[in-house]
Image 1: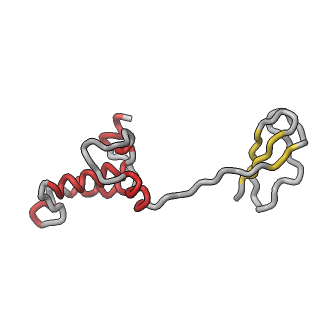
Image 2: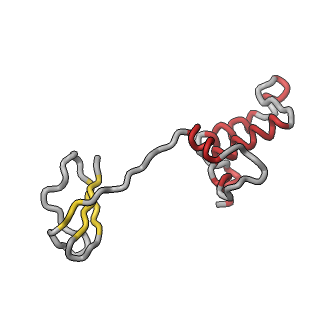
Image 3: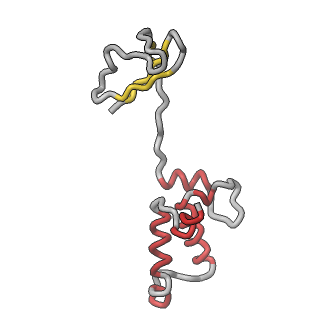
Length: 124
């Protein structure tokens, strides 16, 4: 469902119109001044990135990332945790660690899906 944007020629304010079809509204009115002399403008659009694109842009996990907001993305928290455990020689899927890291693995998987880990949710 498209959102059409118009600029009022009288007050120069932008108005948005959510439409349930692909045809623009026939007689839109300015949402600020009520004027009917509107000009349609080109809207911005969003481009969604794949997880791979996000990882390539953000770089490898590290203790001191270049971007201070790096660990605000829970996917990067999961990546860093997995990398750190691997660096320490811990294989969470092995028989030796499976029971010990069961909860950790669930938290990492949730973080990789974009869910903030519970202890960090509580801080926010």
